[in-house]
Image 1 (cartoon, helix red, strand yellow):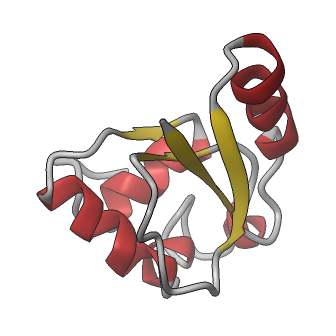
Image 2: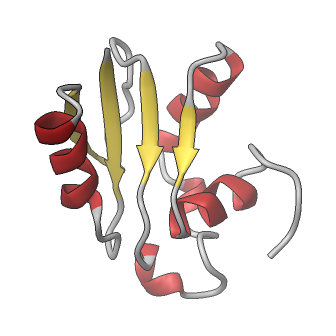
Image 3: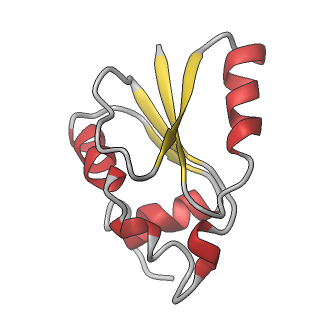
Amino acid sequence: MRIAIIVFPGSNCDRDVHHVLTNVLGVEADLVWHADGNLRGYDGVILPGGFSYGDYLRAGVIAAFSPIMREVRRMAEEGKPVLGICNGFQVLIESGLLPGAL
């Protein structure tokens, strides 16, 4: 299994998530910059916590329009696991991948 960990400007705990996946669980994981547009070859994706883009406007709203989110949406539509932690969860709501409002 290979997991992508998305890194936005202002996100944190991405390296903590990477450490747990690789060193504790023995899962292959990569940090993927938000401007990248390709998640092919990954079996799942994690959006970690923090303050993406400083949470300007509203928590997660700017990150929701990041190029990588098209790929996150594709993975979700393919039934691959997508996990949002803290601010990552807010990004998933703002991008319309989860119902609700902030």
